[in-house]
Length: 265
Image (cartoon, rainbow, N blue to C red; front, side):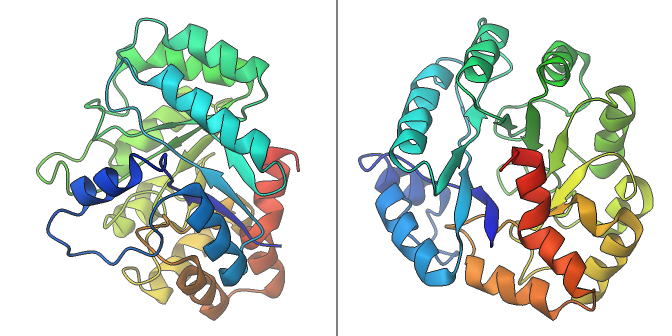
């Protein structure tokens, strides 16, 4: 089994605009049209059995609308799609929406410090982190560099490590091997902490040696297979993980067993 823990889709009407806005200069290849139907078709072709939908609320008014759509997609495709909720730290009803998601069986949420303009270790986020820990809901963070904020990295590894230490009961999933394009710092200060790292958007950008180095220190039982589709191709990420000089058992943990344990599949 292969479970992709980091996939982006949009409504059929929004997908073309979203892809254009996020890739206006055409510099990135797109591997789906970002609709659920095309993603389902391509995932079957690529050998991905299930995938987690992640959406980012860029405005405080968006979460409930986004989450209702995510819940609908999950209910339509219960054997393929796992939904993570979208929350915005500045929404006045954030904790209420978190409780609603928990009551509806959603296992976690996605936060994007760069798009949502917060530092990962800001104290104003602490009530949300504490609530997620109390409700046993994971938070998947974008970590490391993002082109939307090239001069200020909102979730660098040392700040992410601080949050992990402050909230030991919080299930943190740190995208892009813990910090996109900051992997030496990930190895130094974040690897070995009580966090999960996902492999999103790393297959063509991270060396095998660095991936192996981080996995060796962090432990394969805390690595989640993830592609960042449609920005990257899950098939290429599968090949990247398969190419690593790690055991077959470690690969099985990464491809599905860790996700199954975390998601209670």
